[in-house]
Image (cartoon, rainbow, N blue to C red):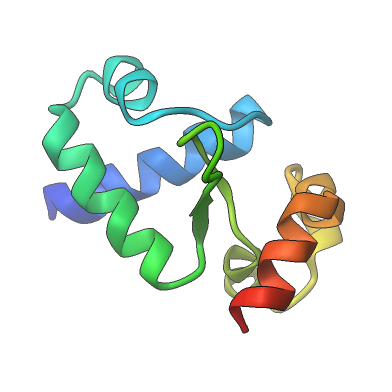
Length: 96
């Protein structure tokens, strides 16, 4: 099994299930992983638009890019309400 991929999927799952932004330390503790490893995974996920980091809180949340993985149908996913959050919509508009 690819540990990095597995960690990335676990990070996404934690953000989906938690329904709230989480910091690197919180995610690492929750997943039982090294903070550096979780940070590198979050950086990669962020590069692909799957997560974003709030500049004020430094916490991570789902980004709009994760919806591509479910066929651009964000309402089909339990975390879909996050796509309607104004802060994510604003980030997406500026970043693209």
